[in-house]
Amino acid sequence: MHDPLAPSDHFFKCDFCLNPWAEDRPMVEGHRGSLICAQCLTLSYQLVINQKAGTKLPPAVTCALCLEYHEDRTHWQSPINEAAWACNRCINQSARILQKDAESGWKIPTKA
Picture: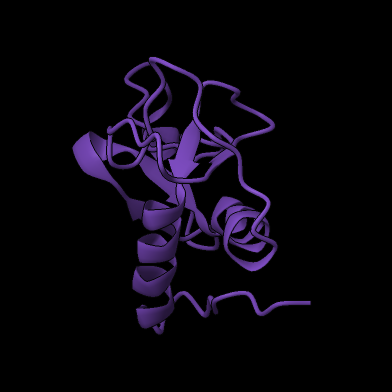
């Protein structure tokens, strides 16, 4: 999320928790500047991918990362920003992208 009213060091925010980008808060960018931080990615991955406990999208709502409506996919809804949803495909792709970034130190969550 791009917040033009935020101070310059808080310009980019995670669409899901609304926390600003920081060196210790790596993020993955979706379409048109949407962002998911490592913490939200971990939560969503554990729920939707590992626990298979995602939910279906309500009508007229799209995934914040790919901007598409997917009736056949499961999704994660942010508990902080209830308007932000992520589909299982975007969660999985974002996890693989962030894990490839050695500087982030982030790893795909394993099943508990």
